[in-house]
Amino acid sequence: MKKTLKWKLAQKLEKLWWKRYLAKKSPSDYLTWKKEYWQQFFSHYENTINLKTTDLIADLGCGPAGIFTIFKNNKVAAVDPLLHEYEKGLEVFNPNLYPNVEFVNSSLEEFEPNKKFNAVFCLNAINHVNNLVASFNKLSQITALGGYCLLSIDAHNNSLLKHLFRAIPGDALHPHQYDLKEYQVFFTDAGFELIDVKLYKTHPIFNYYVLLGKKTI
Image (cartoon, rainbow, N blue to C red; front, side, top):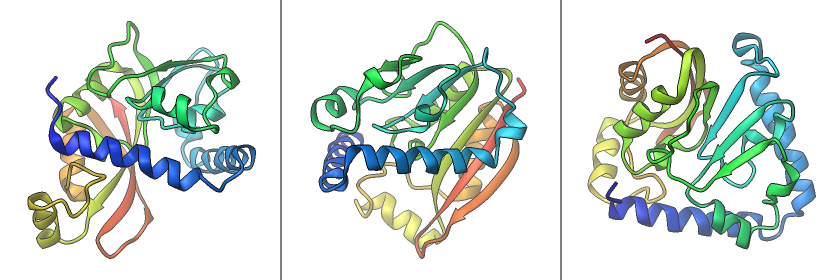
């Protein structure tokens, strides 16, 4: 799949952001804090998703310390196109700490597993992909029928700014600029029933939402 210039730039900036963000943090303290964050985050959804130890999990766009860090009793696929970079440059990312996790250095669109997953997480990632439609279709393709996909997005609040950011690199970390309704359409068109929409954070330009979908077709 041809990579756009916007995507290539966003990947370079993502790698730089992590290095700067973690530069003065203790790796062990950061991991402890991050796991607590993910536990609290997942607590809002665990009764609905109702994971069994036999369920397969995918963490797409996992970064160096994604939600894969809290699922010790399940087989997990953690996927990110920058994993090799994180392993070389970030002390906080040590694959050996997670023997139940298969780490896959791949973009979301190019991930080709030989199985389907009961729970798919795509958190802080869908705004960063190369091809948005292909990425939503991939989420659908790899989610088992009756399985769940938990998706977080930064969605525009202002239509004028949304179109302005599409025209100029006002937000170079995120190649895609859409509002909540548009992301919901992408999600449901891909074959998910929208179960829940939560507003997590507000911002003058973007709001941060989490969408829970169930694979129905």
